[in-house]
Image 1 (cartoon, rainbow, N blue to C red):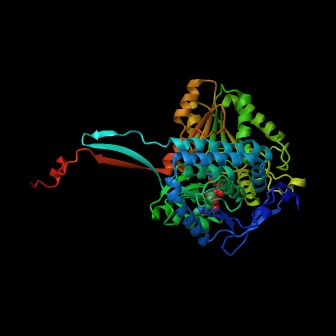
Image 2: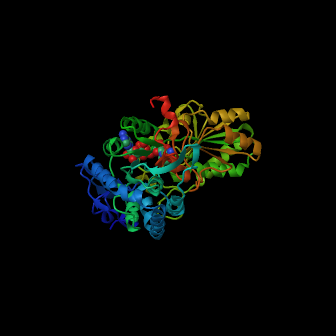
Image 3: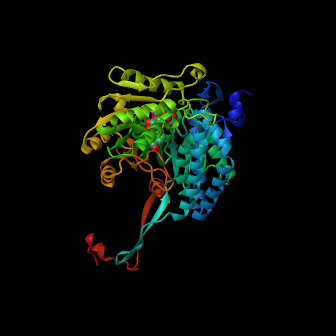
Length: 507
Ligand code: NAD
């Protein structure tokens, strides 16, 4: 066994294949092979045959077959199954954390302190929420009829997830869907299939019936598009980049599917001149570097009011320099590699191009020595960029923070709104009227005040503008995964209703 195997032995765990269909692992049928690589070492941790069209069709068939019984289960029965699911996940927390860290390069402190407990909590939340699906009211809105609302599941949901938080993304997609009585086919990113497969297996172990949760691991353009375009899939729920989201929307529209899009972000971090500087500096570094900056809500653009600007820049530079890069499995490591060499090179490309128009204050290189074999990139601080430059406007998805000054409050808020995105933002001030204005005027699905990043199962997550539409987590997500039926029932027993006169007057 190599070092990687001791972290999580994926080859042994998924010897049966990397497709989970109808409660069983099986190999894919795409006719090619894909390697999952530990980005900290470059070692291969699993070689699997990705899903081809036939695998997607088989998974949809399994989900379709499981739908009537699962949709017909009582909320209490679904809730019981989800409570057992939460218990299974909690019992296997260490295995999930190791698998997540090895495939993503995530520091083990992040996997054990955030990804896994967040997933267990989400599962427990949806176990409870499953019993609270309701319509708003019933009554006689016309004197002759009683009306009420039925909230019904949609059917087979096809979900597509990104690689940055594979376990939490699987949870955010699967839980509200199945809590509401749908069945699901989830396609994780090709790079990071491990914890989505473990998650589906844990669902089976908890007694969730075969076919309710299926996972197909394959590439976007073939398995992904097949799933989005499948006529038996009633809804597409996609989390990923805005560019791919547009393509997914085009395909989903052809079959008139319900669509939920959680797309890219470029979160602003607005520091007013009365803010607690130490809190803002620590918040910016943590908010920019979490998960190596591969977080759709990461702090990416800090706008700092002029009086605090110099102190903020030097505070961030000092703190970034003290962050420890290292082996994700060493509990002392703060920052692991990026998910892949390609992603590291993409991030480096943004920073290298910025050198011609901005200043790289710290970072901007890959570390040498022992870490050179991994996809590492140093925490990077950039100043002096124009608001219109690509490093300010485009999603980088790496450990890079750009800082710009502003003068009046109007300007700070206008700059915060000046990208196409609108997923998350934060405002830093001790003045409740300033933060109140920022929370009203910043166009984003989440605005934090004097913090940046925390999420909670009870509260919705989702975008405005080019960051997409629809909500994950919380009871709001049920709006995506259910449809509302109006039932209108005649109370009069009359054969000839008064309104018939608008059509005929006979008799
Ligand atoms: P991506 O868009 O490249 O891929 C996302 C998923 O889409 C993957 O599973 C991929 O295989 C699949 N895909 C690719 N092409 C496809 C196609 N033509 N048809 C169907 N599916 C296809 O994104 P990524 O690089 O995996 O993840 C990073 C992106 O995800 C960032 O833009 C980030 O902001 C976004 N993200 C958003 C949220 C959110 O909640 N808004 C959360 C996490 C990540």
